[in-house]
Image 1 (cartoon, rainbow, N blue to C red):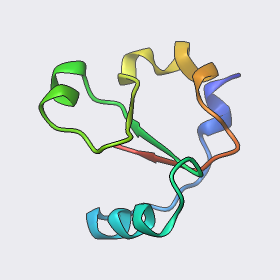
Image 2 (tube, rainbow, N blue to C red; image 1 turned 135 degrees about the horizontal axis):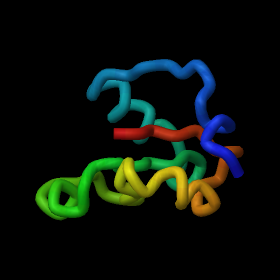
Image 3 (cartoon, helix red, strand yellow; image 1 turned 30 degrees about the horizontal axis):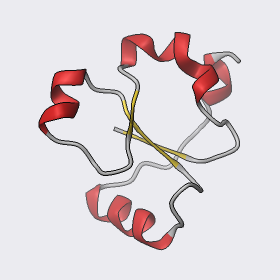
Length: 73
């Protein structure tokens, strides 16, 4: 899997739109992806988020389901 698969035009959402999306969609139908560093993730995170620090993303693409929409923060 290549990172280019994930580089498609996307819709940007603000915090309220993101909360609404999460509330209106069943858990497991999208991927909540936290790309911050582990210490930031430990301080505060959204429940259910998957941590993949940005520098590790190219090597960990195989862990992601390209069929699901992503919310990345």
